[in-house]
Image (cartoon, rainbow, N blue to C red):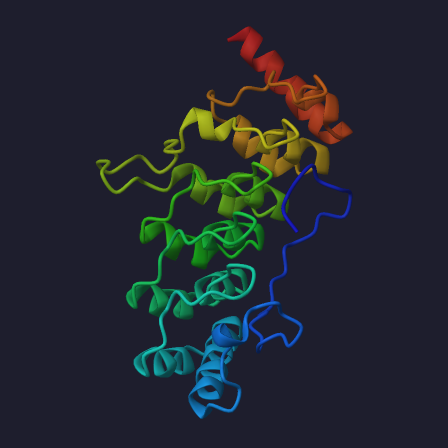
Length: 254
C-alpha cells in the first residue's frame, strides 16, 4: 500500500518476504521453468529466502554469512523489494550497513516506487534513514502516487525523521548550521497525486509538531492548494488551524 491522502487511522507500510517457488499454474514455457528436481535450485531458493528473513529479523551475522556465500545483495522478491528494503523497514541498522557495504543499491526502487529510505521514513526508523542518507540515498524519488520520503516521514508522525530529511547535509556542501534547510523548497512543497504536500498531510492528521517543523521554514508555502482547491488551513484539524493562524499573524506583522 502506498501513501496517499491520509486516512484517520494513519497506517504504516508492512512488507514481508514474498519470495516463492515456481508457480505450477504459470504459463511460462517448460523449457524456461526451473528444474524442481535440481538440488542447486532448492539450495538457491532456500538461501534467497534466508537472506530476506535475516534482513527482516535483524540477524546481521546471518546476513554476512549468506552474502559471503555469494548471494547478491540486490536480489529481488516478486514485488521488487530487496533485503535492504526489509532491513530498513524493520529498523535493523546493522543489517542496512552490512548490505550497503556489500554494494546493495541504496536507491533500488520496488514495484510501486518505494525506496529503502521511503520505507525507513514511513516506519519512523531514524537510525536506518540516517545510514541510508549517509550512503547517498536520494530524498527526491517518489512512489507511483507521487509521495516523497518527506510525505512518508510526516505520515509516521516522527518529528526527528522529518528534521533529518530537512537538514541532512548534501555531501558536496560545506558544513551547515544545524537548522539550515538542505532540502530544496520545491521538494518541501512537492505534492502527491492528490495535490497534497507534506504540510497538507500533517495538518489533516492533526500532527501539530510535524506541521510546526515544516512551517518553521520560510520556504514552506502555506497557501498551496490541492487538486480540490483546498489550502493547508482548509484541511487542518482545529489545533493545526490555530497554529497556521498564529503563523499567519506573525508573518503579517513582520
